[in-house]
Length: 127
Image (tube, rainbow, N blue to C red; front, side, top):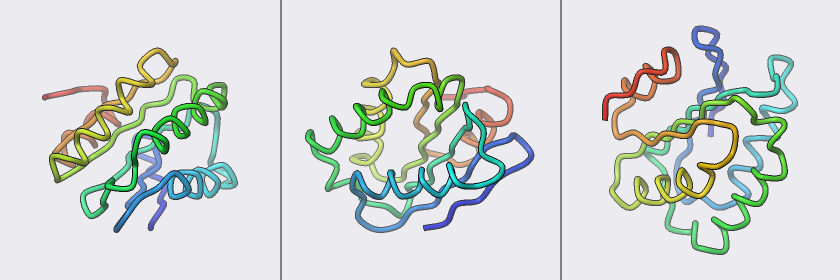
């Protein structure tokens, strides 16, 4: 796992590998929250191209969504991008995108890193 701040675009780049679960996302969020550059509405680009969402079942997804709903004030105005390489991971990320679509943040799922980076910096989406 790596968590890096990208000053150009004011967002966090998180690279994950291997099997993912709820605690993976929670642990990363704790690192970001404790960083001096954190601010409410901080945007995050999740690079899941080397990750496996196979453990993110309905229970884990419900837990993840409830957790994000409970921290809506910290996420208001944020952009959240997911970049995946496998169809199943893309589907899981899209399911999350749909489940949080009523929250005051933008979520978008991508297959290509340049598209996600462009969206994080400029808000441009080419899907």
